[in-house]
Image (cartoon, rainbow, N blue to C red):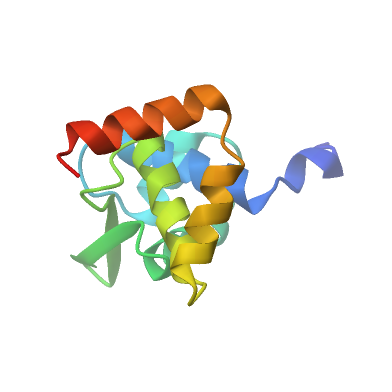
Length: 126
């Protein structure tokens, strides 16, 4: 019997697992194919729900395959780093006062992170 604690994982963890399966596949996958590759006992309907949510967030795209869809990561979210960057942009887009959000973000950076950000901005010619 499965422990209830194991059955209820955070949505972010499930999304990351599904995305990892899509990245590893390197080709569009149906919810059933993703379910099989995960091998975790998740129901196909759960995998479909996760894929639909990722699609709604713009993290994955899909194309018709039979009566359903095959899903694949969008170009700028090809790995965990791309996913994190996408999430950061999504959070920034939620607030109309971008300047204040960015100012507070930068104010909370560690000295090492601030140096990295400064180097990246200078290297980009800004």
